[in-house]
Length: 249
Ligand code: AMP
Image (cartoon, rainbow, N blue to C red; front, side, top):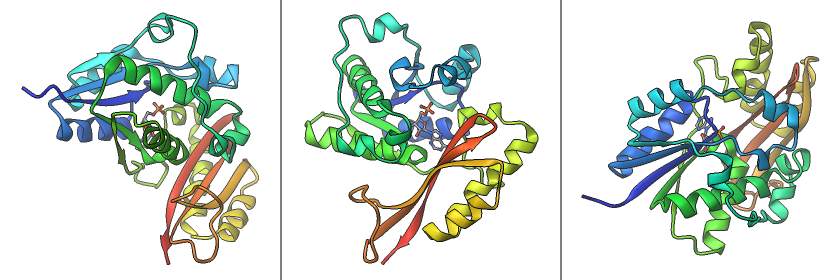
């Protein structure tokens, strides 16, 4: 039997996006570990942490049904038994998402490092939904020779185009309709298009809308080969995040 482990780190409140990661993990290895841990270190906003949806019994069932062989929901003390060894995300961790959520990517990398230490995976599966997170994890793994293969999975969306997110359960039906503005904005394929589309929706409060170079995560320039639109903002106290490839030159 293979002793390779495919690992899917999550914060729970599992939806079809997470389940796609678990299915991909199962294609890679017969051993699939799913962690469920709401990591306080990556929440700069205590209200967001307090309101984060939690449902361990339902999550466990969903993860097992999608192909997980182990669901691991550690206590804080299991993840951080000693003084926390902080991992810093570097300058890219301070851009875009990191500018609005100061310390978020350091907290994210710190927990990924600890989870990898315990699980010792061969593969770790991350979603494109959190594109900057994926970029930062890949970069950290390469630069530090972390012996894990990072595998990415495209964003899973509802039929109407809204990217699935654990935070969507906090949207009212009316807010959910408003949230479709994000997908419409990204589909315009340009920063100007995104900004004008988002500005037309007064219930959406923009954090940022930019077009980045997928290879460097800097702002795209005219001859950037792989461009990606990234958007984050608020609807009625709920923060939403999305991104979309914007073609290549
Ligand atoms: P979270 O539980 O939000 O921390 O997410 C755990 C993993 O699921 C991360 O790698 C996310 O990028 C991924 N993920 C979240 N939403 C989606 C989605 N709609 N499609 C694909 N992957 C997702």
